Length: 458
Image (cartoon, one colour):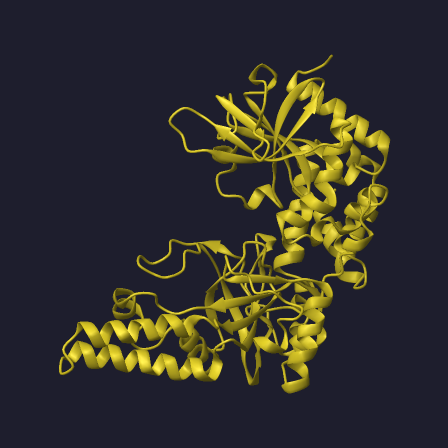
C-alpha cells in the first residue's frame, strides 16, 4: 500500500486538517501499518512532512492544466512528489500558518571588506535593487525556515557607527587626492545616506522559496552564516517601520542576524506593517503557527506534543515543551542535567544537550528538530563518546562518576522519533516512533526499549 500517497491525498482534500491530524488518521485507519519496520514508518512521516513543508498544495496546482495557467510541461513531479519544478506564476503556494523572522542587515566592518565586496552598495542596498528588478534574492536564513515562511528585512540600527568609523579611517589613512580615497569615501557616504533613510527600520518583506542549504561564506565577509535560501516576492515598504514602534514587544537578537517571531508577537508586528503600507496578499492572509506554549504542563505535554510537534521552529522550544518532560518521565527523576561539558584528551570541550540517569547509568542525550537535515550527525555524536570527564552541572562543578557513564552510545531525539547512535558502526538507528507516544504505558514501553538498547537492565 502506498501510504505516502494516502497521506498526501488526505492532506490535499482536507484543507483545515493539520499535518499531524492527517498522520494520526491515516495511520490509525490502517492496522497493517503497525507491522511495518519502525524505520519505514518514521521514513514515511519524514517524507510526508518534507512534502508539506516544501510543496504545500502542489497537487492542486498540478491539476490546473485546464486553466491555461499551467501546462504539462510547465510543472510536473519528477520521480517522486517531493521533487517539484515550479512555474514562476505559482513559485510559492499559500500557507495559512507560517513561521516568520526578522533578518537584521549590517554593513562592512573593514576597509578590506568594503573594497572587496561593497564599493557598489552594501547588502541592505543590494536587497533594494533585487526587489526593484527580479523580486528574488538569496539570503542567509535559519535552518528551520520552510517554503512560504515570511521574512522581514531590517537595516541594523548600529550599522551607522561602523560606517562613520570607516569614514574616519579613510580620511586619516589615504591621500585626499588619491583615487582610492575618493572611491572609498563615496561608497561610505552613499551607505550613510541610505542608513539615514532605512537604519533601524523594517523596510522590506519576502517569502522563503527554496529550502535552506549550507554554503561556504565568502572569505572576509562580516557575517558568518553558512545557511542560505532563496527569498521570493520581495516587496519594499512605502513606510518602513522604525524599531521604536516595536521594541516594546520585540527584542532584536544581538547575537544573530535572525530574530524569530512567535504567535501574537508576529501578529502584532504584521498589523503594524499593514496599518502603514499596502502589502501583498500573501502577507495579509498568513498567520503565525499557533502553538499554545502557555498550556504546556506535566499533564498536557504529551497530548499537545502529539498535536503540534511539527510546529516547533527552535530546538529550545522543542526541549522546553516536550523533550524535558519526556526525559523526566523516562528517567523517573525531576532533575535534568542540561548542556553538560564533555572532555576528551587533546580535544576541545563540547556540550551534550542532556544527560539522564536510568538504572544507575548515565546516558548522553542529543536533541534535534529533524535528524535527517543535520549535517554529519554521527560526527556530532562521536564527541560525546569515550569521554575522560563529564561535568553534569558546570555552575556547581558537579562531575559524573565515569564508571556509570555510557561511553559508546548516545540517545538521539527529534520531532519524529527516538534513535540511538552506536559508536561501533557510526550509525543512528530509530528505536521508537513518537507518534505512538500517547499514554504513560507508552512511556514505559519506550523506557524498556532504551534499557534494552543500552544494555542497562537491573
